[in-house]
Image (cartoon, rainbow, N blue to C red; front, top):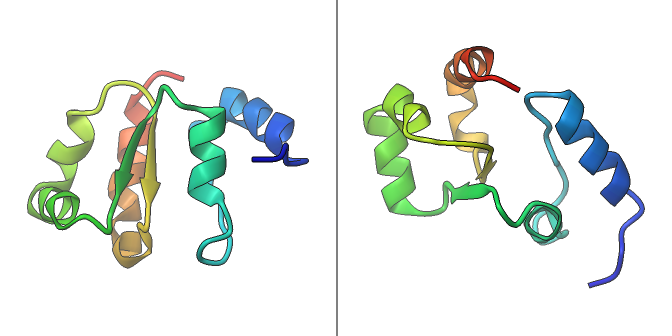
Length: 94
């Protein structure tokens, strides 16, 4: 994988903000880039039926069980639940 121009910028953003969003077309390397830059973080893909079920059943519980930083992928279907994400981010230390 070649070095992308935004790598250093993204690393700086993650230190300043509680939440950053990588957007782009399908198969453009968003997940690959994030896993390269932050291999120690937790990743959840909402393409997984198990992840979907956990989130749909108890979205607050889903976030409470997470320790550290997380990446949500394929989250677009759940955008109406962004208020839950916001509450989770507000109570977490930076």
